[in-house]
Length: 114
Length: 113
Image 1: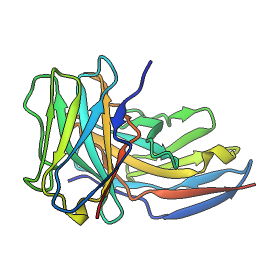
Image 2 (image 1 turned 90 degrees about the vertical axis):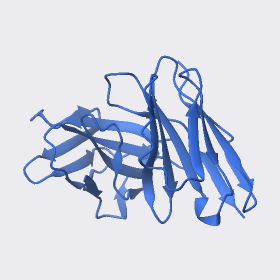
Image 3 (image 1 turned 180 degrees about the horizontal axis):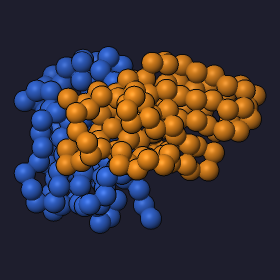
Image 4 (image 1 turned 30 degrees about the vertical axis):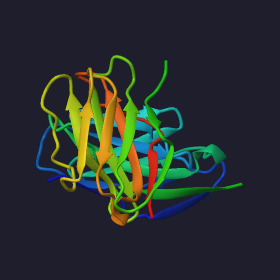
């Protein structure tokens, strides 16, 4: 069975600084995908970044990047130059090839201090 | 284009009543998912539809929960004889066949009093 663990219930960062959100996962499968989703107060889950397990290169999307450590089953999200609009709940999720269902971590609430 | 839409946005119902939640996926997306987000259980998968295939109902918590998808597009999640523990945000997502990224709607917040 897949599990995803986010050990930081809350994080805060000063505007314009860098913050890293942690995520670990467990799966016995070899083909899987990892995601970070952002959920602002509007409730809409927004895809931030994705990583295919077979790719060694860490994914990057503008100010968002991941540190994917496959052997350690770690998938952290780094947000550079934090902006007030980045304040939200962030969920790490995994999806096994062929299984289709996302398995989510417990979430990390990120606060941006002006 | 238009994203996933869900209705109603909020629903308050009395314990024991039946409720229907609606999801309109992104046009052209053949796969549709329902998830539930609650304080105690976090985000959990409920059911998955793919085209005309039999749905994967493995996440439905009890036989009070059912879902259908008509014409390969709109889906309705029905909860019969609602209980207070059914209070949660119900999220719908969709994606295209062969793609693994799921796109979510804004959810329906269900409150059972």
